Length: 309
Length: 142
Image (cartoon, each protein chain N blue to C red):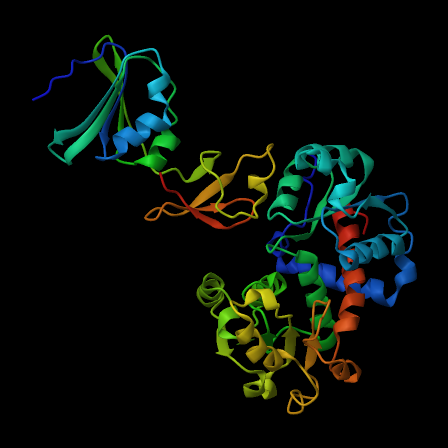
């Protein structure tokens, strides 16, 4: 028998729409009947290789593996690993392949998980590589939208905040375009608009409608899904511009007054001040649930990559 | 006109765009070899007006991808017993491994000694290559 190639998740495009749908369905099943899956990964080990700290993502993966009855090992800071002694990723991953059944990698350098996947004998999951990709956030976002909206059809999705550097935005917008979502609204200051290369790709390959505005109030009534991101001060050339604009991109109850009753507000978290605390109690705010759902989609992903469904 | 005799056994890089001859000479580190090498610049050419030529009196391995990247007009002539035995045209390579580094300062290939940067051609007119690892575009410049 010819051995199957090892499946990795380095970028959302590694999975077809059908595979993504299967994952979403499995995650929903796990969410509804968690006890059915509590021993699915018994005897399996997940290695968490975090070359930079990301407590939330790491705990989400650990929680996912523990809920499946598996175990975890790893490091959460490159200074405590052999990397600090200058070991190559190829060497590290070759060794880890003997210690664990599946590995998740977070790395500050772009392309590091892809490099790891070329030398690994076990499945590799990219848990964020610099400003490049963060595919499990995209999976989490897809599950959240699916749970709240049922389908992806006829949804108007707005992205608000830093659309230039926000990798979660780039990843999600491309994936939603693959799901045939046709209308996107981009709300950002001029300095932080979606990169032209991505806009061209979306328009050419997916024939989507892109509406660009500066302020949320102009479009709030049209939105079905509002995806908020943080605007970082260091992205601006000068402090005056930042101070002039920052309040425009803080979501509060006043700004969503005219929004649809069933609009959902998403955020990849952590937030700083871009969503006022008063919004948390609004039924449209789903960002904390989104973080919770991240565990279930990671559970589905782990079982899928391990082939233990 | 200045005359340079033919070589007996070796390689002639012909049709080099004027100005690239010295750059290729340096890139191939031909100043450090112990066999005869001739660099001719501004040689009159029927098709190119002027061209540069490099004659190497030795059989060496030349990376055609590397030459194609630098100057895709080059012809590579293999000479044996004073006669032309093979003529190769170079082309802009579609895939490149390790010939230049990724311009993205955050790319893993600029930090991990084990990995050689790999690229795929996205625009021949600007020699733009996409990095296999970080997906950023690097424009090759000699």
